[in-house]
Amino acid sequence: MAAGAKRGVNPDSPLARLIAGPMRPGRLTWIGLRPARRAALVAVDRAEVTLEAGLVGDRYAGRPGGPRQVTLIQAEDLAAIAAFLGRAEPASPFDLRRNLVVEGINLLGLADKRFRVGGVLLEATGGCHPCSRMNEILGEGGYNAVRGRGGLTARVIEGGEIAVGDAVRVAS
Image 1 (cartoon, rainbow, N blue to C red):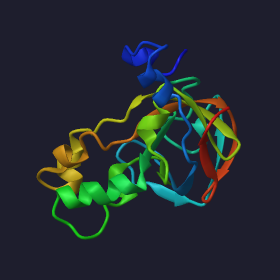
Image 2 (image 1 turned 30 degrees about the horizontal axis):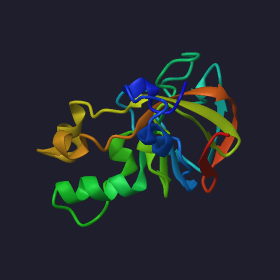
Image 3 (image 1 turned 30 degrees about the vertical axis):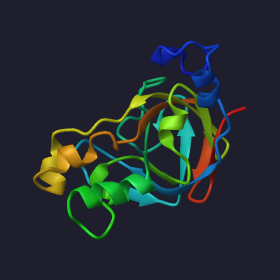
Image 4 (image 1 turned 90 degrees about the vertical axis):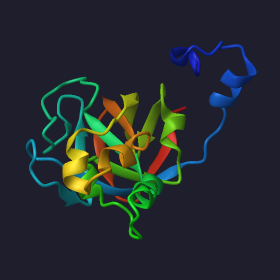
């Protein structure tokens, strides 16, 4: 599908060419597995990713091809969320409950695209919107602090292993 087509952008327009333009690669800075609903996340340095399970050991494992096999958030958004809450330190990835934290690449630029984290191929499936627990976890205003900054959901196209420090880049 042409860049921007899902968003109603004419695929032959200058805007579509800009959307499809080059992006500087980013880097994976954190991996978290959610073993069960409402369970504390477990931070790991590397994880196995499969088509059948998504991130092995995560609660969304066993949902082959599901649109939420992997969730990602930008490190830069953790700082913005904290600023919206009046805090000096970035929000914790444990609080946001996403699987992967990346830096240096704009996740919105990966919408409607396939991208690689290390050797693993993922396909963006949509925004990762905040849940009602954000007020419970982050305090009053937590939900609104995360709105528009919750990251992306993705499905696994090709599995493999990922590790902190891996490059994050648009698939060619």
